[in-house]
Image (cartoon, rainbow, N blue to C red; front, side):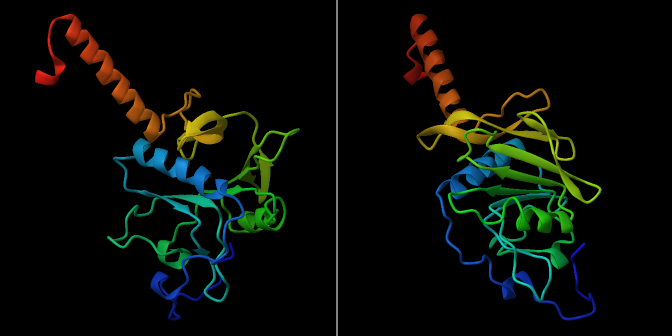
Length: 225
């Protein structure tokens, strides 16, 4: 581990540290892709309070070093909500839990996703490293790596089952915020994709319309029921 700090020293808290690296994203997808995963996860795990999904948030691993800011990360076994002001950043000496998964979305400008960042996350002992490169044409855009004996090994399949998380992650074409393209989604162990919040709302509306139509066939005005 790279957690180089003395617990007896006075360590800075999240309130004392910048909440990001102030570097603007290179591509809108770096916000939209993690945002879709987070919104869907909030529904899947609505009754759980032992997880946190950070988007463009600094992870502090050493009080003498700047934070590393992945596009997204998932931690299990932590408080989902600290207080009403939510997290400012993710400070390892306060959380005491290393993220179980990190996601990087590759833009037209490489930022070390296949080299320095990959090696760094391995040193932090983050179990899953997920790289999504929508620019790829000859290779699959999604790569999921699992840490084994200190090295990341590419996992096969789409979606890829993540047993320690209890979900699978994969990519397929869909529509989010009116944009139809390839997106990342969560799946169950059988490979069935979880609906997004938008899709669930549309599904509910369609069911309501079908029910109203059935009531009208029976001579019942649904607006008066």
